[in-house]
Image (cartoon, rainbow, N blue to C red; front, side, top):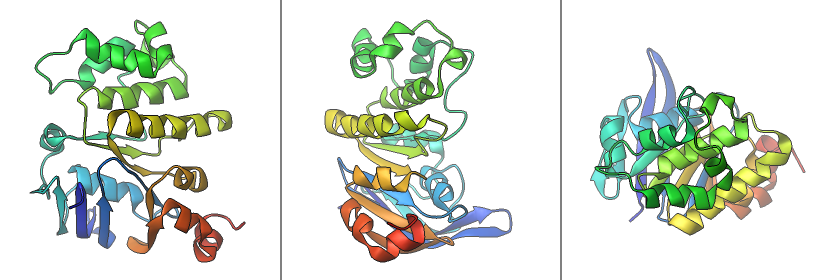
Length: 236
């Protein structure tokens, strides 16, 4: 049984239907990437899965439990955390305070919880008293991921983790996502515009187009597909 199962998901905003019956699975301890052109419904799918918008039709199951249309805060309590593309840190709070906010559903936050973050991202320990708004984009993204990991989720849902990063930091971000999967046994579901880089570190991937499933396969299979390469990855 997959950790996450989305079946025939239909959703959108107002009168606009964005998703037209999308299917997706994510298994334990794997990285799954959703790619596709702008407007394909990638971020909408993440929001529907996490309960930020309603599923008009279809079902979402997490760890065997039906979470269709459950509120996002209750989904977090089940072991799924979401890192949005924008507004993913509290800008006026310090690094340490952001991490405390990330752990809001825990009864107690210990120094060992913080130490796990410091060990993974030493730069955050160096800047633990610094306000998040004064940090670089890459450092803020590290902080956003670390805040989500404070509750030791089974699934980390990430929207565009490399957005706004300098080109030389993009590969580093993907390396860190691999380290998170391997080091914490947390599965990762992400949407990413840097499709080639993301698929290289992904166990599996999905291609969405016009709110529908177009292709799915391992990361390697999608990278090796001439059709996927021509239509969605900019050619050879």
